[in-house]
Image (cartoon, rainbow, N blue to C red; front, side, top):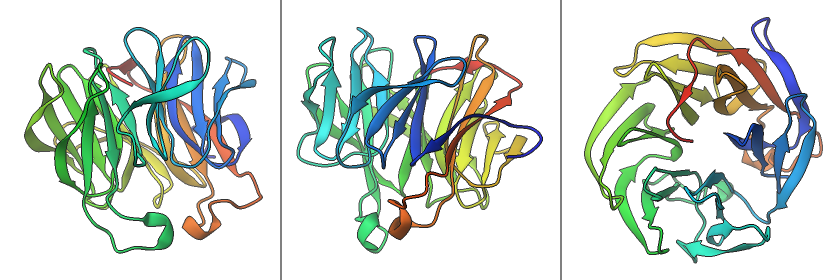
Length: 275
């Protein structure tokens, strides 16, 4: 923690995929296998239990939750039970849903946990009827994704950049371009603000960075552990929630010590877009 941040919650095993939804902060605790919701005081409630990792969450326009999982994309309705939705038979990493109900998911393209050699990953779209197809390839460790207007922005952790695509109504992607070259930045989870800037979390550099399109750095928040994801929310949308954990590599991912925290920082501009 730095003088800029405050601890909102701690004792997470490994937090990821923060979302501001229905007046609460939601966080996926991967190692604990829990989807958590936090009230404004930081008190938590376990909303759903998941097995395997990774898993990330967003919501369809009708209100049902959709999550990535080790076995595909699942949908959770009012009964609270996950059911298969699309992209079955493989694991997916991050997720974001656009205004048309297109659910974008990605996969890294290699077995990170076993130490396999890096390879390019893919992005797929799950349509509202559950049909799934690949819409982009050659993405290097695709991580956080955000939608602003009709643009999908993807963090490529191993390419040190944010990449943008134009979204068609049916979820097809075109117009691929570098939205921001981040130099040595290794972007993980991302979110968009009302000024059109992107906040990205950076694990190896232990920071969250706000960048404009083109790569100009607008703000940096340094912390004392790896930053995995970030989300703007709160009453006025200007609270940046930072998900941070003491990262010891894939071999230590299930360490007994719970070093995960949710930190808060007062941001210059409020939340916009999705998630």
